[in-house]
Image 1 (cartoon, rainbow, N blue to C red):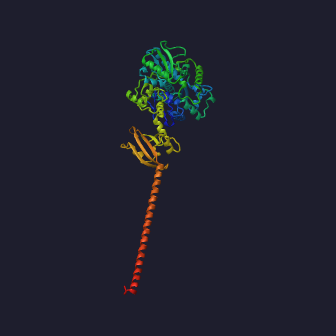
Image 2 (cartoon, rainbow, N blue to C red):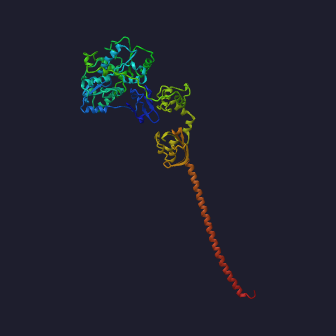
Image 3 (cartoon, one colour):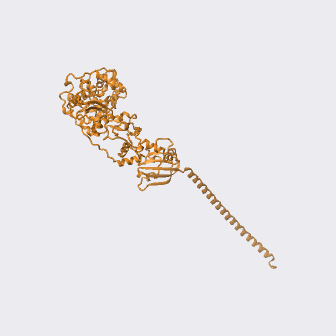
Length: 576
């Protein structure tokens, strides 16, 4: 189940999220941005880095609001880091605030942390493993299960403080009680659904902050009231890291182990690599994916103090507590079974596609990385090395063109100069005939409003049969004269299919002026021919009229002369 969703429309492809992602569980292609769930360890580091709100986490807040408004028994388990995360004059104002918005009871997850610590003591004291790794960070647990199978058996087989407290609450308040964990951790959302009968919903500190604002709850103005049950210093100090194996924050449980606190993804992966390779033994390590542990979780309130102020506030709150509970039953009630606290971690095989070196090399060559020297390993694309980038491309999780070095080389190439300076309008299209790139001439001719055309269908600008015909299997290159009425232009259009139809290139040559000149010449020719025809016809008519007149005159003359001849003959005919 995905706990982070990607809104590609809000993404500006800065790759910050991919750079911090410990498992590169984000797919960046030209048309999509998705979380690769099989690779995601739910740490939330990507969510912390995104300034555009492109990454959203799974929300339980609406479910929780409905539960508390329905009057059902809803108990909150609040992570101890709240003391540094919110603006409080007294940490105990948090209990008042949560009851004010409808919670039946409010307890600290520190109680669950003490329950887990008591279980840890037993395992650490036995000392049966070459190394021991704590199990309270769900993101580190997922990292180990998916990527460091050899280290799985060295994880202490105990549930996290949140899960332990969830079981604890239901054992005391009744199984129908609804439990809600409140903390800064995204991974807790994924962890909660992995167990039944413990935590019913998870909301983050940022979600809670928004809820308080909606209800107009001002924390610093509330009265302080105690939480339902007491907590120990050790339990409260969990978000600071390094307190899990100390019974009273001073005493080591088993001197055979070297106790270390490992926080931050790089430190955790370095430690796990040393464990799996067998380079180190005799360590008992508390692992936290977040740098500075849970006090620096990914979903702190927007108005939270800066990191070291949070550390100072939480340390002061821890010092207000006691070293140990007065009675053990106050922390670990008899109704909580050992089976509920035990959890066996299992190595999980990845379902991701396999790639071979040949396919990776082909990608490197296509990227222009022919030798080791060509591989800059700049990390701008989000991957540590060019080889890692090529692997991601081979799996379909990245795009070759999303490489700064490759783009730079293309930008500096002669092809790019021709593309940018050509007087012809040129566009590059995807398999669905959507615009990927256009040159300045295309914008000048077809995009007078200067809007961003990326992913626009070309048919929205050029409505011609050639656009559809190029997709036919038999069509590789089409050329024709066409008119675009919307801009009153005439073009010679050449559309070419490339990469077996994965892309298309359109080249449009503007022949509007020559076409108008040709049409004007045709008009003059036609007018001249018409005039000539009219003159010829007129001359014919004149000739015919003249001929007609001449015929009539000749006949009249003939008649007249014949009359004159007869007259002459009649008068002197005898002598002739």
